[in-house]
Length: 158
Image 1 (cartoon, one colour):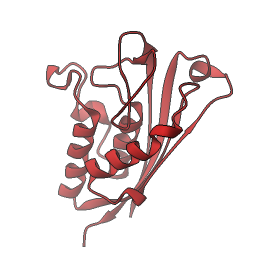
Image 2: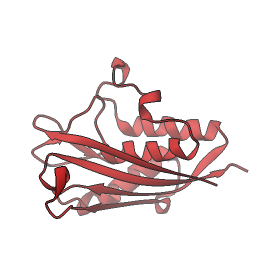
Image 3: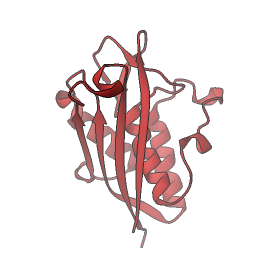
Image 4: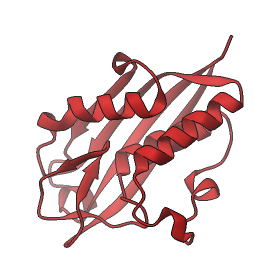
């Protein structure tokens, strides 16, 4: 078994869609980034890469490469899952949390889990996603941005 942790942060800005776990969440702001800036999926990818000591997202998907401009992070997640399989490992489970003051994310969590599971190629019950606020504290609490943390357990492919 191998365990990895991931963390990601993006600023909230006008004029962008808010995409979390591959779901477009209705909100007046979106996350700033070169790709779709899906903070949840980015944290999960970093956790998977970290479990195998493969570096971070920037190593594989640099933000100065035009090929990744506005790309779906679910596509990148599928690529990371494939890389893990090439290294002889598969995802056993993922647990992740989105840190955001607004909007309320509960109505979208099930679809996020399904999207992530499909991209990785695992059962939906292997993917945990939660959301929390910071009670108004810090950059997430003031609405300047969002963050996500994830843990991934990878197991050797028999």
